Length: 150
Image (cartoon, rainbow, N blue to C red; front, side, top):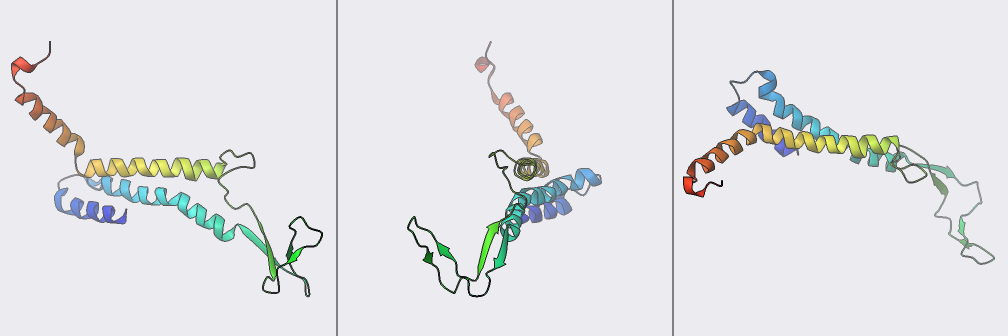
């Protein structure tokens, strides 16, 4: 997406010189905002993974083990010196499986708004509506009068 931003920046400087400030730089700002909005949920995932565990050192002489349904645990050995548990840091889902406030904000709002702004910015900078309208007028002019539908 940063390559698209570079393209829009260069296109704006070269071919949108006669526009007023927001009309000139609007597509650039749309795509700049879309980069941060689309990356927000991915950043939330990184924060959740990086700080979503609380670890505690084992007491001296203690070892971790796994119970496999037998009477005694399978000891893991001395290389495991901490035990960790998951903590809630910007979780996407609640305990019921529904989206949390974090989920709605980052996954739904930020991501979708980012993609809409990306689409709007690209269509704006390449003047897509004007080009489509001009092409439509050209096609309509070329149609012979006998081809028109009644």
